[in-house]
Length: 126
Image 1 (cartoon, rainbow, N blue to C red):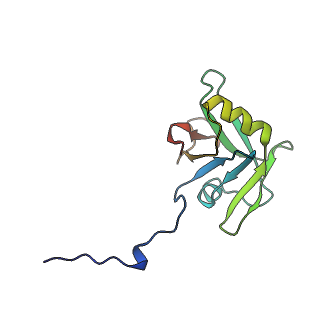
Image 2: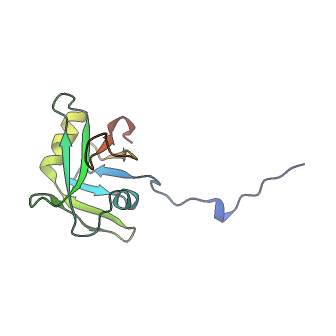
């Protein structure tokens, strides 16, 4: 008999273990800690979201220094960041035909010639 042992060290904490953005029903845009690290974001840093006008279901995110960027703040104690962006959240939900909170992966590499733009992989909505 060959037994494989499972115990507490094999239990994973609940949550996403990859860079993801959440578009919450309340209008909050939240980046999990993996996304914050992936985009090199800290409290007070800013982001922009982009929609491809030719392909409205395609969205992108970037870290920015623009004066009008969305300012990120601490969200809980898990390293995630968030901002209030109900108008943008509504546009994303309409474009994707969703009316609930969505958790969406962020691409591992920037888009080609996107200068820091990362695709929000809308096909991975949870």
